[in-house]
Structure formats: C-alpha cells, structure tokens
Length: 112
Image 1 (cartoon, rainbow, N blue to C red):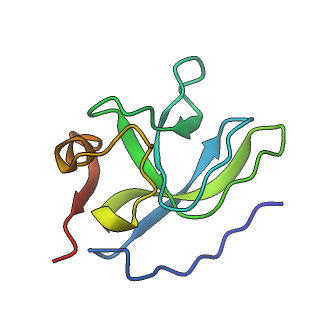
Image 2 (image 1 turned 180 degrees about the vertical axis):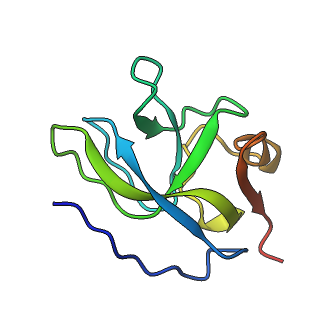
C-alpha cells in the first residue's frame, strides 16, 4: 500500500520538496537515508553506496522489503542536518558526507 502523507521534522534546514520515487525491490532502510540510482535499472532508487556525488535523493520514510519495487515519498531537494541523516557505516567524515550530494539539489550542513 502506498502512503502519501508525511510530517517533516527538525532534521530539515530548508523547506522540504517531496515527490514520489520508485524504490528497488529488496531495499529496506530508515528515513533520511541517502539514495542513488540503481546501476542496472536507473528508474529505481537504492541506498547510496558512499561514492561521492552519486546521491540524488533522501528517503522521507521507512522502507521495508516487500519483494517488489515500491513507490514512496522522497526528498529530491532540500537541506538536512548532517547528524540527522542515516549515513552508511563506511561514511564517517564530514567531507565525505558533504560530497554525497555534490551536483544535486540536496545539501547537508552542521547543526549549528
């Protein structure tokens, strides 16, 4: 079942822009997870792999693996607090986190 409502929280640094995106089958992740295009099916989104400049969106809600592609609300644009983002375990420096979205309409910044 597709959910279309969401409630933004204090993790946002700018007014949110939302749209719906297609999440690839097999994916499961928390809200505010960086997303990138799938290598094989570029019409679907998957969890960002840590490669600088390849994240294109941020998840707006929890995704559970349903065994099929699913549509969900995503943020294709906006500002987010670095500390609120669900970063991959391999991404530990602020430099790497800022580099995630280079060239996209998303930015991350310090909490201050």
